[in-house]
Length: 166
Image: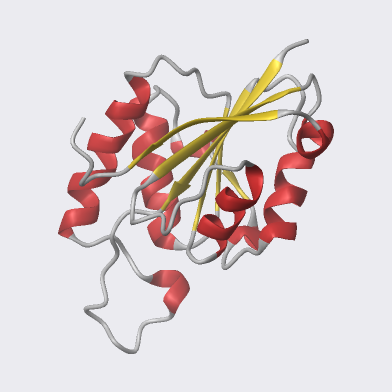
């Protein structure tokens, strides 16, 4: 039986510089622009091929996703934007994963707190207090089909974030 690998990434640090700006339109701040490419390279160094980059439509999540996709040699046009991943709850993550193409062995989803931390904690017995900005959480499942991911045996793989020294 094949394994499917799910990688969750919280968007990089965003800017609050424009108080009247819609939340969905907030960009990354300088730290976010520094952290995202560094974390993308750290993920690439784990030799995990990523078949699909899936993101919330929020500017900060899409920009973070773009850094990762480009590190993996993908173009922004190949990023899958899923509107309901903006401020997603567990059911939204489940829906996005179950709808993924079975040809993909690994998918990487970019989203927001608190939903992404809550969802990560629902996947295995490994608990994290908080996914800081640009954190990466990974789990694998023994299944051939994404629709069966949640009923399959899952294993925690790793948790990484910018302030965790490599």
